[in-house]
Structure formats: C-alpha cells, structure tokens
Length: 328
Image 1 (cartoon, rainbow, N blue to C red):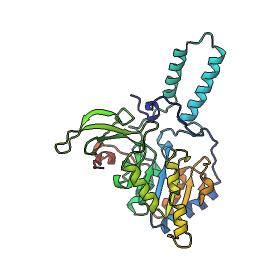
Image 2: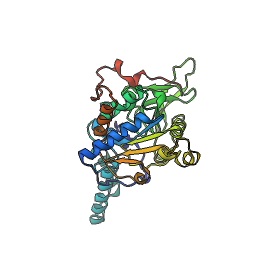
Image 3: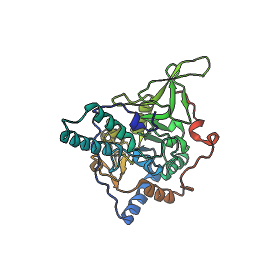
Image 4: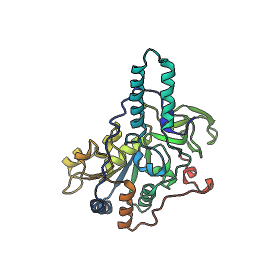
C-alpha cells in the first residue's frame, strides 16, 4: 500500500473544496509586526488552542491538499486534462485504460518523502515547546502524519480529528498502539493484529478516516471541549474548508459574547495564519499571510523559547511517537 494518505483514500466524488487558490505572502515587516502581536496574545491567553492543517507539514516534504501544488489541485488538473484527451479521442479511447491512467497519476504527483521519513518542522517543534511551557493547552489537528506526537506533544493534549496513519486501536477496550510504519489502510478497517492489553485480545483497526466517516471519539469530543474553553484560537496551515473542523475556532464566539466570560472583549480571539485566503478570514481578529515556520520562529523568539530547529530522530527507541500507548 502506498505510504500516502491521499493515495489510500477511496475513489469518490466527494466535495474537496476550492483548490489551487493563489498564495499570498505579506511583506517581512508586516509579518514580523503581526507575529509579535500573536506572541503577545499567547502570553495573555488563559487557554490557547492551536488548529493545524497540512500547511504546517509541507516543510517536512509532505504535500498539502489545496495549495497551488496540492494533491487535490493537481488531481483536478490531471482530471481536466484527461477529460480533454477523452473528448479528442473518444472513438479510439478504451474507457478502462483511461480510468486506470488517472488512478496511477494520482500517486505520481506525491513527493518522494513519505510519512515514515517525515520529521517535525520548526512549527511542530515550537508548538511542542509552547505546550511544555503551558502556553498552549490543546491542539486540534486535521493531519494524519503523526508529527505532533513525534515532536513531543502529549497525547492527552492532542485531538487528531482525521486520525493517525501510525495508530491502531482495539475495538473492545480502545487501547491505542503506535507503530513505526503506517498501518497500510484507511477507513477504520481491521488490520489483522490483536490487542495485548491484559486478557483483552480484541481485534485492532486502523485509525485513519476515509471520506464521509464520522470524526473519531474521543478526539472529536476533546476537541469540542477544548474549543469551548479557549480564550485564543490559533489556526495554522489550513484553508478551513472541511466541516465540522472549520467551525471549531468559532464555536464559542456568540455564546461568550452574550455572557461576557472574557471581560470587555466578551469572546475568544481568533488568529489565522495561512498562505491562502480563507472564507473565515473576515471573522478572525488577526490574519497573517505568511509561511507558518517564519511566524512561529518569531513567536518563539518573543516568548523566549529554546532551539526551534527541525526535530530529528535517529533511533526508534527515542521516537516520541512510539512512547505513546494510551487507553481512550
């Protein structure tokens, strides 16, 4: 099985949202000014939640989905090209051959770096440092790459709402097992392994969602609880197109505005940092069009954090991902 989430997803006509929107990068001085303000708000916040998407992992060599060179963007371009070819050669084209060519093309657009080779980026490292310094209380991630755990984020402070390609979960006792290679499947299917917790011996299944599946528990429940507690939401590297995760940074705004739970302001702040514009930008208190690593380096400097270099693991024994084995 190909070591990429996109290649493993079932063939579907699911709505993948707007793809290929142009990227915007603000001037360096403006990025610095906004990043310093973000650091100030993190320092002031009582409960900060980070929301992360594929854009924070592109520096690790993993593709995003809707960027100019994203998986879905290139897939759409390829499909349009195939459609044009089919129209020109309709009488000569074998439909079965044409369909197989499209499927093969989907894997060819993926960079050589797979999930097993990817390592945490500067952004992952800084987020882990913020969690350790009690500046960030929870992370809600749409990513399945395991890089937050690899950077040292505790499992209890992370909601992976689309799953994790390295994780299996027992269908009986919910014990989680983290592997050093992807499970090789998506869709919450049985992997063939059995639980070794006590006398359980229940069957294990992968923990990576396919299209149209419900968000996993307890991750989604924990995400909702954290989102409702937040006094600051920081959105990094996502175009906020997927329901219901796109709404989580805004779940508490109206109620808290009425109840005035956050002093004069009355509602949590929302910051969006993404290279592409999002439909939620107009609802945010601060929008930063910049590379997330650039912003997080400035934040780390302002808050006096340590080394923000990319996290490297030389030994499986030292891999934080493999240190996790929790019961959900």
